[in-house]
Image 1 (cartoon, helix red, strand yellow):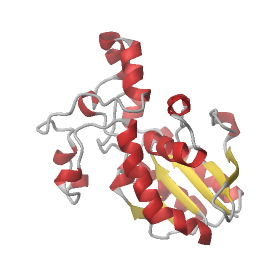
Image 2 (image 1 turned 45 degrees about the vertical axis):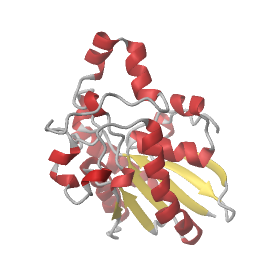
Image 3 (image 1 turned 135 degrees about the horizontal axis):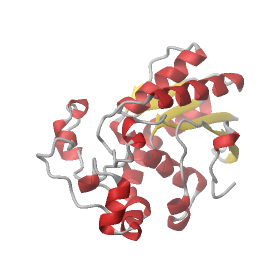
Image 4 (image 1 turned 90 degrees about the vertical axis):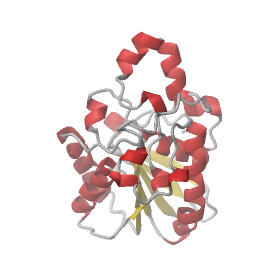
Length: 237
């Protein structure tokens, strides 16, 4: 049996401001750093040795992982992959969620956030928030950088990476992935075999490690949030 730990980064500055963040590379708030520290402490209490670490290219996920590693006294290098980035919110990027709900209606904004294959309007390539204009992504081939994404688009890139780079390593050790709300939702859809209706209801809390037990046949036997006081409904468990 191996362990797969999924963790959404701690609260970011734009989480606090209730803005659509996507690929904009913002850092953690002080509360987000505390969430990451608590996550590391909870993992340490579980006495689980992590053999492989993965994260996106984004600062908030990387910073969360580094804080966790410090708690674990483990300075292993970790793989960084743009495929684990947050979903690109297109033209919604940088906008306040509450203000957009008033402007477009709560139902339409909810569809943009939770529907499976609906993409927001593309973000203008000249916009300062477009990934083409953010130095973090300078090494990604421009043809692979999206202007907008649906959850389905996010799922496809996340799962392609998971199957090619991570899945087989679970047989040989324990893995921790520090990523984002939608990239982790994509992984949960795949791992738990959720349908499109179920995935729309799945909410991923910030800074709360989801511990998944996987047997030798790559089947999930059980899973739990380590911080039960902030646990969310896992839909299937």
